[in-house]
Picture (spheres, protein in one colour):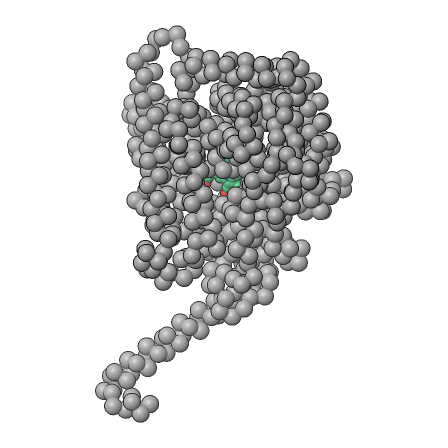
Length: 548
Ligand code: HEM
């Protein structure tokens, strides 16, 4: 105060005003880390931190599940000043994401992704597309993965990559086995989306793809990347102290290179097809080539609808492939792990596949006649959802659910993990019991409440942003598993039982896939080797017939 008396009056007044303002901001900051009374319930928040210290950086869905038992189907958390809403029941998922889609279909802003990875293409990447007319256009285009006829057209591609996987496993050493599953997971959407065979790319493309994808997922993972959204000052740390900046650049460069290469491949094959027009060859139309065909037709019309630019198309293709690979890989790998760990279930699956396809590896249409293997897939999707917390949404305007206020700007997380392990719905929910789906189409236990919101799986999300690759992914995994089960016994390499514990056997990142595990693919009998090779040759001939 003594020092102030030497300052001119106006300066003293300014210092006091600034101090009051800063004090006000500080109080406001601290108060906004506490949960308002009318928000959905949740664990008590601490002044200054909210619930930040209680939200685990790894496998948060386990903690959310614990909280669902205490606080119910919808909880709210304060991550510092940010609001987080966790949906934990099919009913709240259906009500908010499907019925109130207008309010819950945007994606939250992520500084690292938007500013450092997407850059000038920020409005084109599906992970950052908001609930607007571009989303509708994007989703209409991706519908080539959804309709019944489109799924049928894709089937030869899924057969071909599954046959290649089965053939490659004949000669794979243990360390190569899991890599083969990854290559399959990339090869399938690559063929479907841009009509390119993985074998026709650089030999190191798959390895580069997976190492960059790992870096990319870590940049999205709380705990691996610094919390630059909660603490903006971290954005200004120079690159030499902020590894995430160079990692984001690496992801961005690979994204540009790969996305535009998918588009170039499609353009080349379309040009080739045009040159050969009138020839007898049937050509496969990938998702991107179908979109281009539609767009050309649209441009020829007067009053044409808006069409995609070259760059937008590259991002449609790239976004689809990126979203497909790790999720499908995780699902197939979990399936393989559970088959090896549960020999009784595998024996039933073997019986079923031998019944429907006694003499040769099954074709794609087998997926219509394997209810037990389908039940195994549903059980894998229930127990090991590849994205247990989905992809976050943002609330676009304030809403109210059963008297609870849901604030504008809150991030919404869907906890499929808790929904799919709820003992009120499922008998012995933590166990692998595929028969539950034979006893009830939704896998529900006797006496479980059946509401319109209940589904066989929630793993693909809900509402306007539901996964567009849902059926395509399920078909891919079913065809691959059918071919693998036809040819092989999947057995643990070592005597000890395989670990299935989510805490130790599964990766803690955003995608829930198994940590490396040891299994052998042992031919069920030697005669099957020749059949697998023949199946592979036939698939190659089919791809050749399609001009691939
Ligand atoms: C088992 C495999 C898969 C799982 C578990 C899975 C799961 C999911 C989930 C949970 C979402 C977020 C949905 C929501 O916000 O409600 C999503 C979005 C998405 N998925 Fe999948 N997915 C799988 C396979 C695929 C495949 C094969 C493709 C494409 C070929 C694909 C393309 C996408 C795209 C483009 C989005 C973003 C959609 C949007 O934001 O509008 N997914 N997926």
